[in-house]
Amino acid sequence: MSIKQAINGKTSLVGLMGWPVEHSLSPCMHNAAFAELGLDWAYVPLPVRPDDLPQALKGLAALNFVGVNVTIPHKQAVMRYMDDLSKAAKTIGAVNTIHLQGNKFMGYNTDAPGFLNALVEKDCHPKGMRVAVLGAGGAARAVVFALAWAEADAVVILNRTTERAAFLIEDLNDTFPQSKLDFAHLTNNSLAALDGKIDLVVNTTSVGMHPEKEKSPWPTDVAIPRNAVFCDLVYNPLETVFLARAREAGAKVIDGLGMLVHQGAAAFEHWTGQAAPIEVMRRACLAGLVNKLASE
Image (tube, rainbow, N blue to C red; front, side, top):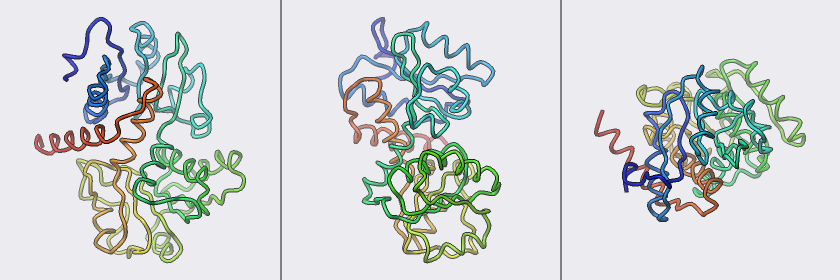
């Protein structure tokens, strides 16, 4: 069922607000889920320039949208326009899912549960783990929140700009006073020092993402801690250089597709009130990636 076939006067509309959005797999993922469940819904890409965000949000209500996902660069900017925020969204400081209930805008962050579910389905359980998080941006905030909530033993954030990592920890310490959260400057030496002291490494940066697929946040002259699990939030390519090197060194790896699917599934359930067909969504994303590779 294509988007064109699905849309009629009674179709429930959702979509993705960002700038740009043409790279996203979310439309094919959600439309496949709607088709699987026989729902008269459609998910559409909504490219919105940063300066147009307030007007775009007003337009959602006027056009009777049920909700939207929110991606770069709007995840923080939309917060001021929400009528209510989930605890996770408030603490993380970012909204990636909006549900319109009447004229009220409800803001959620499904990145955190999406990340945790992606780990668990690969039999990686963060409770008690020592974790290194590479990067301190919006994705890192959701990941660190999720790890603290899941009772990881300790989390260290490694970032080129240590001030940003320090601010992230400061924001989360009040919510998780019992968590061991720390930060360090991201250097070859700080990465090398992780060997034997870490159970999970998570790349939350965009380094290694298409089109710069040859790059990695882990330098080639730093040994891979083979006893750690390596997770990359990047899903295009599915196996980044970061993950390929870890796998070759004997480490367990987890790609970014699982988080994409599970955060989407959580948004789907907020909007529809129905259980998301996760495997259908995963297959749609894989097909979308194949199509993107074929068109390059």
